Image (cartoon, rainbow, N blue to C red; front, side):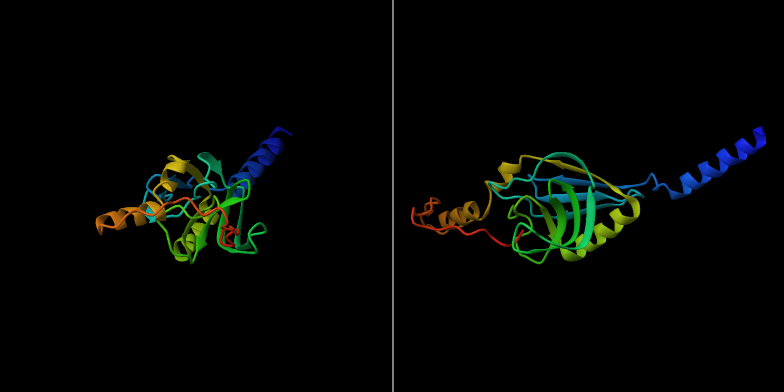
Length: 180
């Protein structure tokens, strides 16, 4: 009886060990200040990519996150079915995902972390295979303060021009940007 129990325990331990994900995982670090993502792959290889995080009013949350779900062919329910290829969801509907939009390196999203589609495809594959830990740091609003308007003002100042007011006219109507 004791041998049977021992064999049974060893058998189930082997089954569980084989079906459990490997302990090696992908470490994803997002630096909102620099608008960069650093990935440390399971074997220690480090890769750095440009990202675009949440713009002012749509700041990307900071902290440590786990992968909640993944969808290689996701379309946003909130933003007019905007494509979110290779989406890795980490918080309240926010995801790391691919984009074909320009502007990587500056905050432009509605809170998601966007990267180029080829990089998103590669990251998705690694996370699918090894799992991931996600850490987002920096001052979400600080990066937004250096957005396009700030750059344009500095450019005009260098050319001898006067920076334009960043205050929109009161009759201006804003529409939601369908690009997530």
